[in-house]
Length: 332
Ligand code: NDP
Image 1 (cartoon, rainbow, N blue to C red):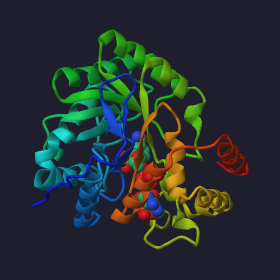
Image 2 (image 1 turned 90 degrees about the vertical axis):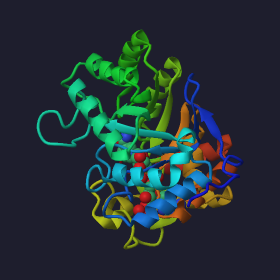
Image 3 (image 1 turned 180 degrees about the horizontal axis):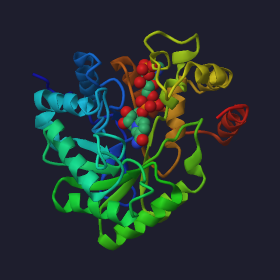
Image 4 (image 1 turned 30 degrees about the vertical axis):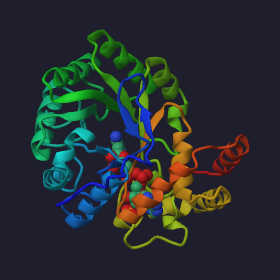
């Protein structure tokens, strides 16, 4: 029987989400990769237990995580039932609807029908009565924002979600939906955007909107899927994401960024950090970022990444050096 580490709350840093009462661990764990039916179950269990043992209270899922789509929620539900159920009130579990999940006109995007059906499916797969945060995974160009907002609001009223969030919404869309949620008094507290040294789009308007609206970001792919770690410094390992044929992280991308990654790695060494640690600290320097949402294919990666919390400060000189190195990146 799993017994959580009694020291689990001693080292983790918890940061407030916007103006809400909710705090998230500065490092949260996402289950997009490595938690599907194709992945060894005991490794999944080991990663989740190690995360919670280190004070990672937040686990992020979505309807379509796998493969097969849905299997990450099913596997997480099993680990929850077998190991973590006594700790349910110590956990923040999130899921999302928006990307393709089932055939026909209701299996994706942001209609009321799609969002509410998808949330019900996610709860069933995970064996939960409610999720802590439920997201609209992407904006739907064909559904009025008000309909998506009202569907999320209804989930809160039904007791199926405690808080709601949006993901991949632009600064303008975020400001617009925030206004609707404000009128409805929906507990809309969080935005989940991609943010890392290679993709800084949120600095161009979104962080201002978040600050103005009293919201926070939880940033996904803070390690650029592994590029901003030591993973590819000496080639592309066979067990890496870039080698797996992922459409989101190609070997070409690894080669195109290698020079810049090598220089960032040297700078990280001067700070007494690994590149992964520096990439996470850099992400967390943004006041509107409450948490970084990492992935991990093994316990050792998770444990390495937690060391980022030992050095979160950047001098102006270090920030300038990072900007100068990043400016050398020709492709984006
Ligand atoms: P990361 O940028 O953290 O990449 C994680 C990958 O990097 C790992 O699987 C591993 O790859 C490698 N890695 C991690 N730590 C180390 C280390 N210390 N040393 C070497 N390699 C390391 O995040 P993800 O892209 O996985 O995304 C994280 C989460 O964000 C997802 O699980 C999901 O919850 C969320 N997300 C949300 C999206 C949205 O649209 N809302 C979209 C994408 C993600 P390897 O397999 O090669 O070992």
